[in-house]
Image 1 (cartoon, rainbow, N blue to C red):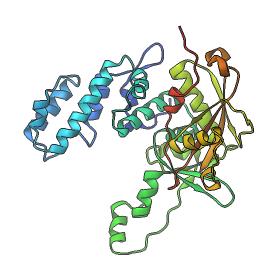
Image 2: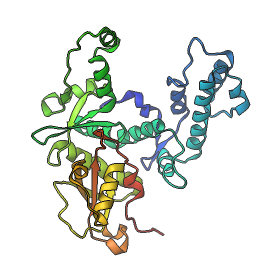
Image 3: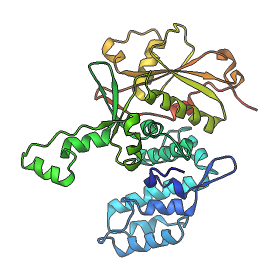
Image 4: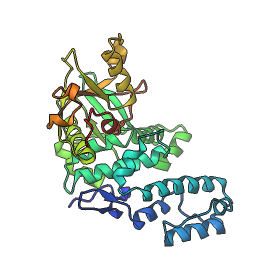
Length: 338
């Protein structure tokens, strides 16, 4: 069994006979160790009291008046947000049920950070006990913002946005780099490694550094690994087997259904589907296209049964990609089941 992403706290969850994830007290306690809630030397007596109470019983009911007694108003807000999140989490029969429910109804009322954390946990669950490095790196697209670079030769390179920003600020030298920058000292440029077979083993030593670049061209291993994960993603939530194949282009002039894997791809696909003119600069934002086909055509809406579903992902004007894996769950043309 390969151990990776230990800070996701996946290891604190239970798994039922249907391979669904069950919330445990230890999982809830893990949030109390996060920077937003962890005690610091300046924590007031009331904060320490509430923190200890929740450590002893992470499902304990805490009156809002008790939260208001904390001296730090920011800490009050952090606790209020987390307790609302916790209450909804423990009411759901499984983490999957909670996650799917986030995107139904009146909209997501959970901080994006929490949604990304749950997405990472679900990805880790689906990757299984012995994923390849490229499968794990491809999964990072679902829960971490990516910075896209398109090279002159057409290679599409995806790097972690936070890592790119960190290196831009410090040259990869942490606080020393910040000090050098403040004193106008030149910083040595550090190139991030592109994940390939020759360095794949290094990923497991740097799995939480998020400092490997993934190539995303449709005919490369990264796009194939992402496709396999998305197949598992759909099957896990909907029990529906599909095949997803990266495409160089969509040659179907009469496609019946499409799903954007991010906000920008959704906008572009909608415009093309409606026969609107999309300028070349906008089209150039499209990074990957995919064809999704149902193995069991009976699970599809009758009016499009047997027809392929087209997927796309695209960067924004700042060359960033923010994946929305929930789109694949809520926008599939699934037939109603009795």
